[in-house]
Amino acid sequence: MSKYALVTGASRGIGREIANALAADGYHLYLTCIHSEKQLTEYAAALSDRYHISCIPFIGDMGNADDVAALFSSIQDLDVLINNAGISYVGLLSEMSPADWRKVLSTNLDSVFYTSRLAIPLMLRKHSGKIINLSSVWGNVGASMETAYSASKGGVNSFTKALAKELAPSGIQVNAIACGVIDTDMNRCFSPDEMEALRQEIPCDRIGTPEEAAQLVKNLLHAPAYLTGQIITLDGGWT
Image 1 (cartoon, rainbow, N blue to C red):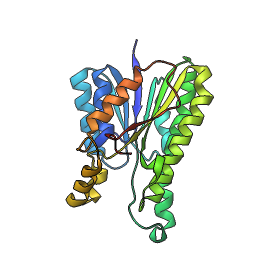
Image 2: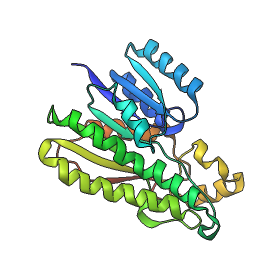
Image 3: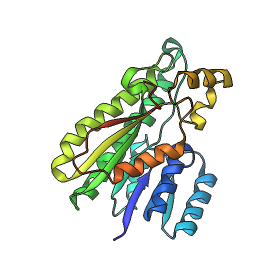
């Protein structure tokens, strides 16, 4: 039977690797991003050619309810929702504008609400489905200079636990992956010296890879049905 998955924030980094992993497993894909239209369109075509699956790109803001509604107007079936879209903000909270605060919360947390609320009815029809939210270790413990990001990911964690309880009777699993330092463009704001200092703090003695995050997503898709409502940390033993 055909399987369908939606991956948000799929033009680069973790989302891009998740899309590749799911395509390799035969999933038909819906992929989103907000800015990189050419990059996403070309990647979707490449995945379709390589794995012989349908791969539909969508350019829109997952933190905008109207954009998400437009996306779902073309989705008739869905087995897996991967909420990966996210942005960071590094700086003092006292110097953060209300607009920047709202953008971080909208992209990282509101998006999870908007996509989940429209995915759930499609999954309820089949009494099955999996929602996986990409979170962060900062959602567990907080990070100095990243208050908005930490708050948004803490919200994702609580959202995950609560929704898992709500949907468990319907056979829908909801889990989150709390990533540590992963080698993505999001961390390009840090200098080489700062990244080296982070590496030295990690017991695994290296930065994680997007491929490892994608592998964990695949593992969760094959996890026992009893595994739900969990925040699974992927950080090399850091936190």
